[in-house]
View 1 (spheres, rainbow, N blue to C red):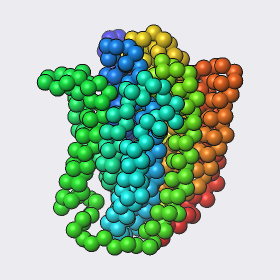
View 2 (view 1 turned 180 degrees about the vertical axis):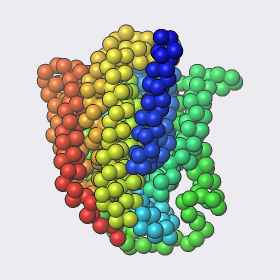
View 3 (view 1 turned 180 degrees about the horizontal axis):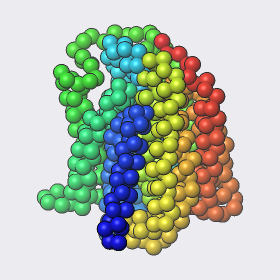
View 4 (view 1 turned 120 degrees about the vertical axis):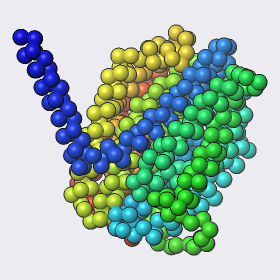
Length: 473
């Protein structure tokens, strides 16, 4: 009897192993996982490191200073994210073009695309926006709805982060090009290394460990900016190596290419407008929440930090979809492009659903890692229940929008974002928070409506199959 039971258990284990290997051996699924897991690891680790940074600030002994520091980081991040999202929009065009050229075996065109993207990012976005941020720091923070304690805590933090943005923008361009050719492990290794260094630097400079002074939130800024500089050095070292899969020669004289610019404009302008619409909408949304007070805004910022972790599977598989769809279309494999898009959506959605269950049932325990303030824990953990409901729609729209962008179809993600953010998130947040008095929960109910509407638009566009026939010269 015992032997029969052991035999059945062994057969069950063998079946599970067989099912797992057959799951992975599917060639489409294998390609998706092979490309996406380094991206997912990189994004998850970046979010986790960011969460640890926020936790460190939340555990500053002075509770009032801790709340102001967390709020200051949140206020600062919103305008900075405008710059990052605009840079990312240019990178979307670069990734789509590079993926197409690689799929079409036109590798010689990659060098020119990357150089154009880097120069446009630096001279049209990073340098002007950093300068503007350094000059008008207080005015920007006041416009964001920051109260006086938040401005005092975050003024220097804001200025230092604006300097770091120059290097962060450069790093994003290199990463986008590497993902376009299908190289995702190198950015993962570099980002994990510098983020690990950033966490250690934050601990040392925030609390004044070893022989360093305790700088609080300013120390977090110094460590973060320095990590971006180190990442830039490591990125350059990697792409100039002889064995680098991304062939770029910085000694070669730059030549303006009208076709590259036209493609970047055609693909990148809608992506830029989408990013701009999203960030402006979020700014307005943040102002509504900031009006609820520093403690409630700190609760909101912690919930946002956790949300950032939860949407990483959708973002990672969306980036993978963008690369694989672009290369498939470049090789004239239209059915393959659709299969890759559907498979990335399937796997990404499975992971996001699992994360939704964790957020719904273990919210207070997760928020308790950030702070021991019972008011903040209660507010944030209630918001996490709504975030859990957001997951299925958020993941699907992120992945399918990534597939559309990889095809060069950036108009419909723009339409979806514009209607979702302005037509639902901002308006409903104003109604729920300012008119109906639902507080923080009302704000997050508006986020749920926004994500659902965006999902409907993106999914509808994907079903038309018109994205398969967009041409990139």
